[in-house]
Image (tube, rainbow, N blue to C red; front, top):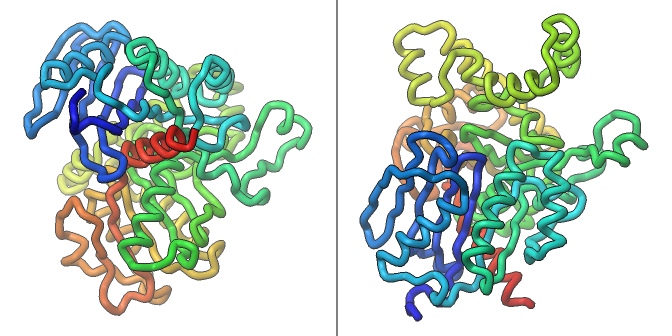
Length: 402
């Protein structure tokens, strides 16, 4: 048995054509190894594995997620770790949608697998891929407890006024239609980290967390409990995202069907894959968009302005819902790495006690940091998210309690 892996958790985050993995010690947060398999089931598939300070990328056919898991297992073996004898505490899996069935970390068995499959109608782009990842890992590591951690769990207890859609209540009840919220693992982790950074009791802190990546969401968290969030029954609602539209008039869907003769699947593809920043300017990478803006591209400028407008809209709404704001925290790829977005999102809010320090905002760091000015009444932070560590800790805690 490899000593440094005793009690570690192997975390899998499966996408439709990708598989991220990380072997981490939940108590210390030490990452023993991590990697990502990309373009699974497509031409040009590859896998990158990082361990012992070295990273290697290999292009090879990966016909399915099981092949990706097996190649990852071989990478571990090549570097001296036999996962089947490594003393793993658990295998933790990110599952996007828990529906009404799951709102806490759950030990995976056949019934849980069937429920995740049933709930896939609420997240057809995500849950099937998550399920495939769980199946692949269970096949290779059948003796290690598998734990599902759900993106929707943190928002399960939203106040009814925030969770309820104003449609026929009986229809909503029959088809599980409500606001579920997503990125919950990240929002929960980051809000707790922000409180720790500030030396404040989480229960006494009212904060807005902005998870800005290719997928983006905002949350209002009062005393550690979410009172509102931007994503809804699916991850499509809310902020403008890389390829997703975010909030739109529901009548737009009917209009596209009636006038443009688009079917349900075509509209689904349009709003999830060909909208957002990509739909507006052809790019969904903020580095590319910033370059286009600087070069005078009007479409890129319009896309960026729409993105910031929607972001400020939610910040303002949540500030009023909370009544007071102690902290605004940026996280995820864009939130952690784009000073431009952070500055523009909070521009001209000095009268509301929100002042960003330009030098602090421009500084780069992988650590949690304050970017607000000394005279800012509201703390503005950048806190790196770590969903894998959060999943590992929740998985280990559940298994330890059995």
